[in-house]
Length: 208
Image 1: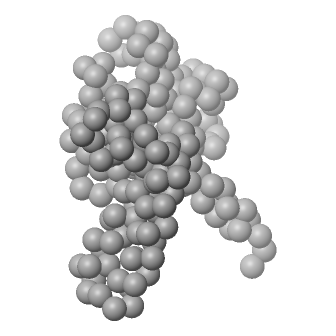
Image 2 (image 1 turned 60 degrees about the vertical axis):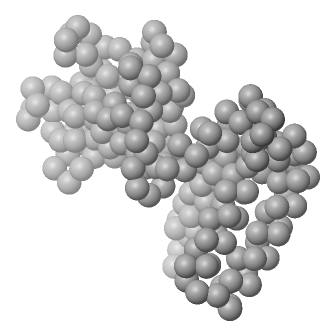
Image 3 (image 1 turned 135 degrees about the horizontal axis):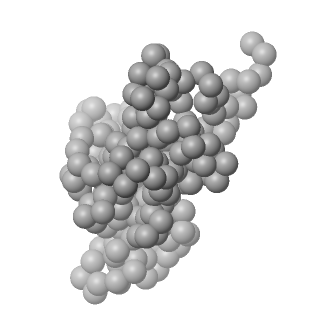
């Protein structure tokens, strides 16, 4: 993780900005401030703590709402005066109920996958009659698994005989159905990414 003694606490009068980032979607969730006590509590508990400038006290994210941040990784910037805190959020980050303190818009890139997963989870829970995802979930995991197999074949075929646009479209179909399949088994792409991170860490630690 990090050595608190290596940080520049003097520049911010004992406080360091902490950028909170969803480890799976890479969305920036919020900006908070930590003092040495908040950092120690975060590292010890595995739950993100901040120092409240308005209340002048230590507080754990989600202490009243239950929307906590589980610590995954923590690193300092090149000047050792800002922290990047990678987390697994439980619930929305903002007190207003939005996913991030900058709103619900997932923006471009991988952040949209978190938004899409939210829709898939809702369809799984509500089981609407005219929903495509609801229909897949009603026959899960066999039907979603079948679709993943079909879409995988179509991706492979598009890779050798279709345009880049066709390949991207088929890959989107495959990714969507894979997300549905994973959700049907109470898994997500985040769980898959965790495995990839661990495998990478093991390989990177091996002598070259």
